[in-house]
Image (cartoon, rainbow, N blue to C red; front, side, top):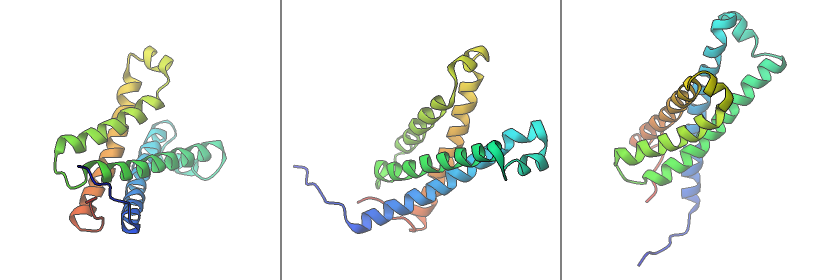
Length: 151
């Protein structure tokens, strides 16, 4: 018989901590990737300057914020999916699922087909990096007992 356990305030706080940590980690990695995409075309100085104003700056900050928000949702999901389980396949599966959804959603199908799939590969690889970093930060936080696992 399965007994339902109501969520406590402590559970909610731990989930919020997981969301904030994973969101910040994901947002920072995404911001670094976005900046790296701009640098080859205009150089480092101009890429940094483009972040301050205009459509280019708005696009950068909104994209980084969306990645951070996605990372926050990932953090909550990851915390509940892995619970106290040390199954590496489960952990990798959560990372891969979020990476595929985010990566494939970013790709323009017409562009991907014309580039013979490179857009798919790059978007998924970047998403893997974003969510793997978020997962690693959550694992570190769990090991340090900054975030408690779901019981």
